Length: 388
Image 1 (cartoon, one colour):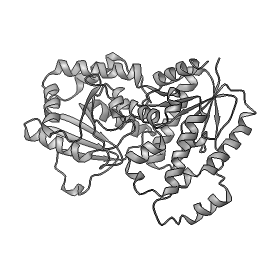
Image 2 (image 1 turned 90 degrees about the vertical axis):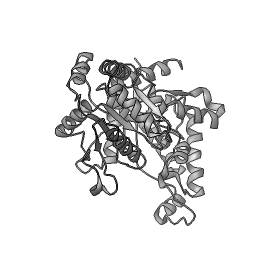
Image 3 (image 1 turned 180 degrees about the vertical axis):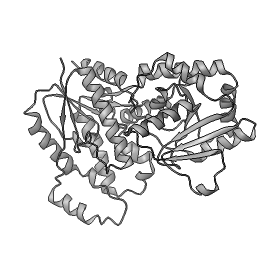
Image 4 (image 1 turned 135 degrees about the vertical axis):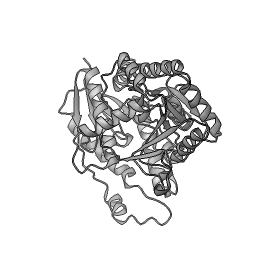
């Protein structure tokens, strides 16, 4: 039996009442990832937390944060990563494991160990910096640091797993010497699912046949394409299809001026029973999830929607094109697509119950075979076994 250790500098599996929304999402991912890995491998050691110990010079930079020529990220300091490696070597000496798994490059970039080393991150740091707004205006030191963490991890690890072909292609192109180590393994849904195909049929039969419901989930209205989702909803109503947009996790600007067909739910804590029950209802009642991001590494909410047989409408940005398979679990559109293309796709399926039913079933089947954490962990194990 292959034994595995999951490493992180934070105790991400320990939730607290003060956990922020952004942290809650990562903690949830770590919990579902490690539960699935434990289930597939049969055993899992959890090595965390690790102490943040920078070098003296890095410590001064972190304290001052005085970089007049751009944004500085202290988490990318290589000395922090080197110290993570020293701590991990000591901790690994006391456990009997075959594989070390990290969900962030920085934890293992400088780790040398006899075990098989696997990094399973959403994309290279440099790729994210080039794609996301947070990467704008970085100082040269941080740019060098994140590129170094990427390069060291790809050189050091035995296997680099990234959830999308978009992320994989970037890593292979930028670091061709390590291209054979990089594989695409989708992530899974951060939601409990014991639903069956029969349940998906029942959920579909209970949906409204009078009003089309679109579901928008995300904490960043602008980046996630909330403006496009709102415009699509308006267009559908103008063309004669009564349509409601339900927004979870954020509020659009000028929310007091929103039309009556927009419902704001705010942040819903999926870790609470009441929050999970409310999300279950929203995913079940919706006809489509809309994720029209301008930047997105993958889109875990697509996986979660799939567990309810809820098709997704996404942009052709980043890893969304790997999360959504055309006409299998939804459809993707270019960000500059005219509103008519969205409305014709949505109204066409809404008017054809049998075609929509088939799409919900193929969406659920795709979740089961590809977009659940259990499926992801099995694919991870298969790739690790091929290294032997």
